[in-house]
Length: 247
Image (cartoon, rainbow, N blue to C red; front, top):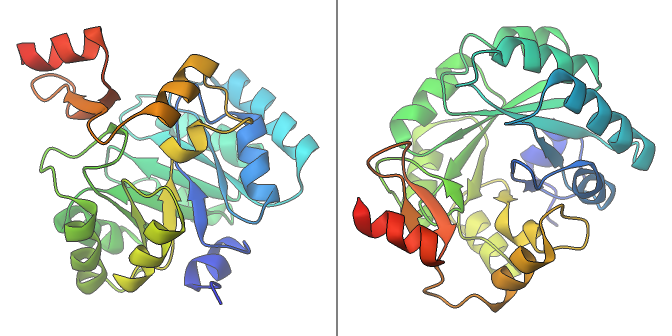
């Protein structure tokens, strides 16, 4: 029933993708998501080539299912990191924070697929021109780094679906089956979740972080970085509230 174009492209059972999360989305979580029929993505934003090699070796020891690696293109060594991920057996490279046009050919030449995360229709159209296989339309509800335009998931997803022919995955504030069905109703071919997976046993997050996520209310996050590195959705605490109020 839920087998979509995304499943066919990625060779997975369910159109559910683990969002790339630095320090949290490591081998155990990646393997667990892939083994369950989704697509696990290794959060390689801060990893070295050696880190990627070690983590992917562990992933392959835990599952023989497809997995991917998430790499922010703002990294000056992005080409080297992508090359390492491909050599380590990643069947998917998920990119963000940059133009995928330069990198898509080298990824396709290796036989892997390209996913790119966008926060606006304009960037989605550029991704389609670049030849990516799947576009993730990520709304402002998402945890972590967000787009400067602050467009919500429900607003962004259907507009991206209407603007491109490339299969679209919805992300941002999705945490259960209701969000999954809503994404499909908006025309998406699947979903990407990060924060929800952060609270799992396999996640590398500290137990205090997991408990904070579970206990969080509807007003439990704030956005920092609007005047510096870009909007970043965080759990509210004394530090993040202080930073947000100072901007």
